[in-house]
Length: 309
Image 1: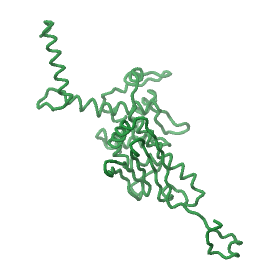
Image 2 (image 1 turned 120 degrees about the horizontal axis):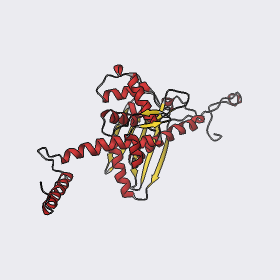
Image 3 (image 1 turned 135 degrees about the vertical axis):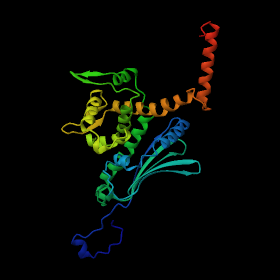
C-alpha cells in the first residue's frame, strides 16, 4: 500500500482517509488426487449422470445453505460442458458457480467461485474473506460428501433387517419400512434431497416434497400422516431430532440407507426386472440373454436329473 499512488493529500491521510481493498471475485477449491486415475474418470462420469439436477432451486439451496423462493433473483441451473473430451459439471447459484472436473486425468477438482459476496449477505471488504472462505469450502464439501456416499451406500444385513422389520425402542413401537413400498420409496427419495442442509428440515418442508411423489396435493396432505412417518423414521435411526426444535436431520446411517433403498429400487430392481420378464417382445439386453441361458441350463439340468414337470 505504501507503493501505490494516493489521490489523497497529506491532510486527507492525517484525517484517516485510506484505500480499502474489496473482493470482486474469490475462488475456493478442493482437489482429490486419485491413486487409480482410470477409476476416477469412471467415477466422475457417474457423478455427472447422477447430479444433473443439483442446480434446481430445491437442491442448490441446500448446497449453499440459503433459502430460495420464487422471488429470489438469479439463475439456478446445472450444465455439463465438454472441452474436447474433458467434461465438467457446473452448478449455478445467482452469481456463484461450482465447477467440477477430472483434472489432468488424475484428480477430481471442485471449485466454488463467488462473483458477488452480497449473494450471501457478506460485505466486500477484505476483512470478510474468512466468512467467504467458510461459504466456499462448505459448499465444496457438502457436494463431495453426498457424491461420495451415493457411490458407497452399501449397508449390512443387520442394518437392512432393522429397517424392513417392525421395531420397538424403549416401549415405543414403529412399523416396518418395507423395501418395495411406494410410500417408503418416496420418503427415502425426498430424504436424499435433504441430505445437504445444516439447519435440518421440519414437517411442512418434508410434506411439500413428499406429497407430489405420491400424487397428492401438499395443501391437503395430512399433517398427522407426516408426523407418523417422521416418528417411525426416527425410531428406525434414519432421522434424529435437532435439540430444542421441531426440526430433523438425517443420521450418517440414515443417509446411506436412504440412498441404498432409493437407488437400488429405482436403478436396479425395477428396470432390470423388466428386462428379464417373459412378456413379448423381449428386450435385447445382455442381462436378458444371460438370464435366458441360465433358465435354459436349469431346465436341462432338471431333465437330466429326471425332475422335469
